[in-house]
Image 1 (tube, rainbow, N blue to C red):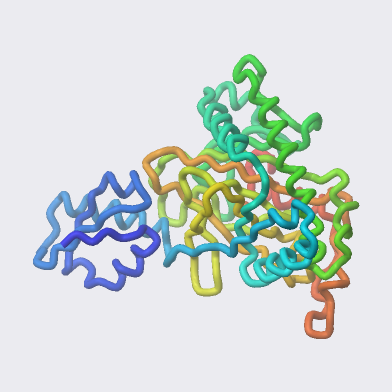
Image 2 (cartoon, rainbow, N blue to C red):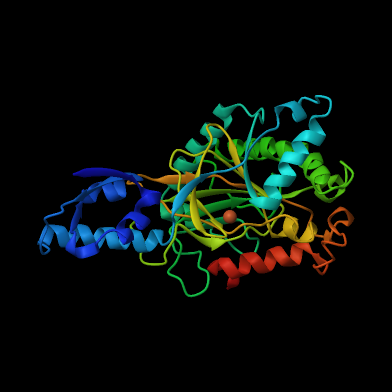
Length: 372
Ligand SMILES: [Fe+2]
C-alpha cells in the first residue's frame, strides 16, 4: 500500500506506527528531492534487508533533523492594499488585524503590498548568481567586524549545535562604509540590483510603520523618528541540498533581534515556526511576504507582541535561497516600553536598552567571524 505523506506529517505517522516490526522502505532519493515524498508500508515485512537499512538510515537522519515538526500552518494573512492606498478607515481595521497576529502568532503574511513581483524574483536570481561565485571571490569580502559581507557554510554557529547549513551575504544601507561587495567585474550589476531592491524594501517597511504604531495603541507616526534613517539589512542566504545531522539546521532555531523581518515567498520553502505545542512548517502565500516581529518589537511592546522562534531547513534536492530584509530602528534608539502597551493587566516588564548594543551582541553570538 502506498501512502503519500506530507513531510510535516511524517514524524507523527512514523512514531504512531508499529515501527520496525511493520517495516518500511522509502524511495530514498525522494527524501532529499522533495518535501513531499512517499513512504511504502509493507505490513508483512519481516527483518531488514540492506536496501531497507539504507532507506531507514536516511529516514532516521531526516526525521531527527526535522525533529518534532508536526504539521504545517497557514499564517494570518493581512491585506495591506486598502491601507497603503489611503482608504478611509483602513489604518484602524488593518492595524487591528496586525495587532491580533502579533499578539497571537508573531508571524503573518502580507499581501496587497504593491511590490511588483518581478523585482523579487530578479533578486532571487541575483542571489543565486552571487552564491555561484567561487569561494575565493566570496571570501575576498568575508564578514568582518562591520557585520557585513559573506559568511560561508559553517560560519554561523549557535551553542553546541553542528554549524548551520547556510551561507549568506549581508548588506546594509546603500553607500554605507560597512558594506562589502564582490568586485564589480566578478558579478556586474549585482551591487546596483541589491541596492535598488534594498530601497524598495525599505520604503515598503517605512510605509507599514503607522500600522505597527496603531497596533501598539500609539499615535500613527510614533515610530517614524526612530527609523530616520532605519538600520536595515538585506541578507541573501543559500541553503545547499545537504542532509542534516541530528539537531543540525539550515538556520538554527532563533528569534530575530530587530523590529520586523520580511521574507518574500521563495521557490523552496523550509521555514518552520515554534508554537506552544511544537514546530510547524510555514505554508507560504503566493507572492507574499512572511513578516515576523523581532525581539526589539517584543520588548518595545512590553512583551505584548511575540518574537516567535523559527528555523529553516532545506529538505529538497535543489538549492534553497532566502532573501530576508531586516528592518530595525536606529542603533541609538532606546527601546523603552510603549505607553500604549502598559496597563494594569500588562504592567511594565521590560528594562529599557539601546538597540545598537543588543544587535552587536546578537550578531557576535551567532557568527564566528564576527566573534574573532
Ligand atoms: Fe530569523
